[in-house]
Image 1 (cartoon, rainbow, N blue to C red):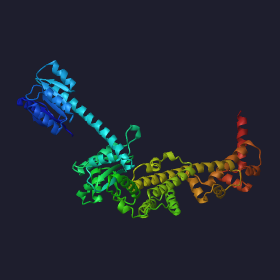
Image 2: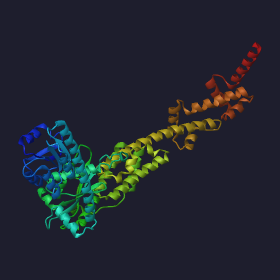
Image 3: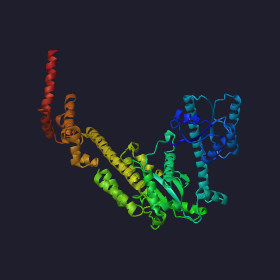
Image 4: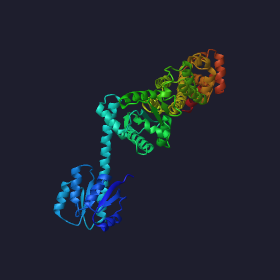
Amino acid sequence: MQWNRAILVDDEVFTRKGLLKLIDWEACGFQIVDEADNGEDALELIERLQPDVVITDIRMPVLDGLELIRHVVTKDIVKPYFIIVSGYDDFNYAQQAVRYGVHDFILKPIDETEFSHALVRLSERLKSDREARLREERLLSGALMESLIIGEADEELLHEWEQRLELQPGSRLFYVFVERNDYQQASAANGNDDGRTEFKDRVEAALLAISNGEQPFYLHEHRNRIGIIVPGSILHSFQGCQRGFARRIQQSLADSSRERIFVYFGQPVLQLSRIQEAYETAKESLLYKYIYDESGIVIHEEASQHGLHYIGLEEGLYEQFLEQIEELHFEKLEVTIRLLFESFREKLYAPEAVKTAINQCVLDVVRVLGSMDGDQSRLSSLEPMTEWHDRNLSLQGLKRLFTEFAIESANYIAQLRKEQHKGGIQKIRAYIEAHYHENISLKGIAGKFYMNPVYLGQLFKKAYGVYFNDFLLQLRVNEAKRLLRQTDLRIYEVAERVGFGNPDYFVTQFEKLERMTPSEYRSRLMKEDVSQGANR
């Protein structure tokens, strides 16, 4: 926790010591950094220590409390808040105190609760002031950094920055990007900035720790990464090694999640006026991101020796990928994906080439889903897969996301295939029911629906619990019974109507199911009619 720094000023030593014991200063957010027993000594302390708060008595020798406040306000060297503690309940003092901008006026004897509450309120105000100053400084620094990296800084601005960065003539300067990868983005609906401010604060804290607070750094936010001007002097602690500095940044920012930190170094320059060149080469280093995925450190001097490739994937690899998805060969699929991503690194694919290859694979899967009347919105991994290039993903992170998409797509395609088969067998049954009176066969229907006859027979038995021929025979016999009951058609005519070309075969099949011939079936119906008529 950052304590607010305060000094006590009172000519009575017992009063000062009493205040030190009476108040739980740290609980109120303060730390007493020094004391003075007169206004003159206090003035020297204020100028030297630059405290946040001065707690002073009114009546003191040499320089009283109000004169002390007037001197500080007039000199405008520092601007601490003042709290007056006095046993003199004099309205004139209060009026003057207000004129000088005194924060509070506390009467003796001091009430512990009242004073503590006043300190807590002041601590909150100081915190708010610091945050406002930090925001203002960041806005100003951002504008100044922007001027530097686009080459529009004039000599006065360059001189100001050289002093800010405590640069020595002839010292090297680097432009460095620090990038967070594979992190879970917060929802924009929450009204946040996807953690960019929080990450910038972490980078700043890491830099301060590396330099022990002795080297000033200025950070600039480049959409989804942080840019830093790094003086070469800071690398002395790392034997001048850029990689050592980068590793320390990674270690300082590491957390327990899958988040990975990438660091990109541009080429060094010897003058602040040429920092734009360092910035441009740092941007070029971003293109080698996937080549150095394992370490997450890209140093332009090394990386630029490699030629990046913008080639596409072999057509056969696309087909192999799709085939393994459709056939649910998960082990082969994972091997193919691993080989695919290894080739990105080994063949020095530029990020744009990786993007093209991945998007082509995703598009091919979506086309398959469309051909099967699938609903692509049911794939939870599709949206992050189509938006991945707008996020910071390492090659490992992209591989995880792509594998999740491939496996989810394979399972969904399998589900669609089952649904299609279920719907297809229903269409086949409807076709049989509509055409049973024709000369149809399992082989003929299988050909009509582009299916293997054996597979169709198995599928029909699995769906309806009866073989195709038995189902067809039952349909024909049921219709024959209806015709025998409702018409006076001859037996051979009934046989023709229900799809039997041979009347004798019809009789045999009818008798097989009904345990009587068609003639016996009709005769039995006539006898029952006569019997019922006699009874009436």
